[in-house]
Length: 310
Ligand code: CO
Image (cartoon, rainbow, N blue to C red; front, side, top):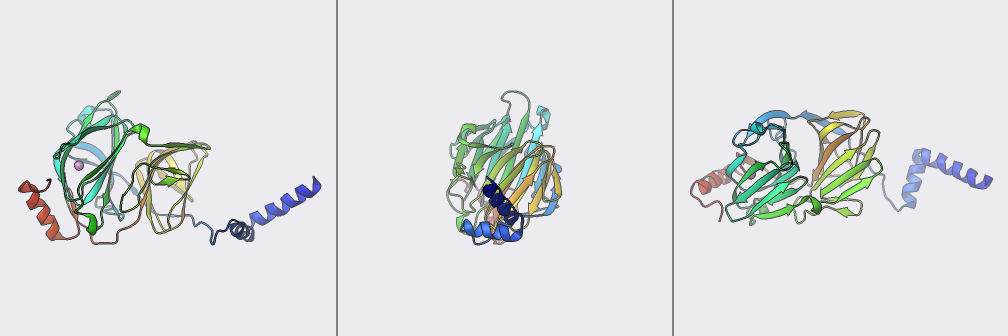
């Protein structure tokens, strides 16, 4: 017993110091320790309207923060007053990128120019690769009550993939795995947490999209490629990365590093969003995201002539 305790104490001493961390790292076959990411910028979402007048909060894709390569836009719609959202997003085109809808409460009825039709609702998601072009509409519907709470994320496509045929990944709530951890849970829409993989596949930028809830005092630790662009967006409550606090309606962009460590003193819910940057020029105007201005002109001309969606 005494020898056991002595061994434990020696081990504790080793683990408490940097030398101990390196030693344990070597024992596990690691070549270097994980580098925690730090926040480089916090951006509050700005109130705006889009579509036919839907009230929303935009944290990415505005003057304050136009792009976090490959991410182009992040909108949150959250209201229990149907007047704020009923007008919806009537028929409009997209070309050259991907739109991701994640709906926490209520729903969106979507239909498009090539005959796809469905409902994204109550914990469901849709990853739509617009590719060479789609004309669609996204109209809010009430499900269990008047509350509508949803997010839309835009993800760029590399120039070489802007002309792929449109593709939909429609995910009902049951298709999105939820992992329970100590005082935390995570829904994995895209990417991987431990052995649990999200259902979204085949996306060029290898994205991660997690919906994480922390109880008061909990911590969430996530490993990710060091060169990925990664940010968090807080849905409710307050979280911290390092010593920096981020609160409801704020986006926090992180610097390079191989791990994301998020804590919360009072509890909070946030999205973790990450992907490989594309590092190409971005030309965007309205619903189109291309590489050059000439390609944008062509997209508008194709839409006006009815050539955008085939
Ligand atoms: Co759209």
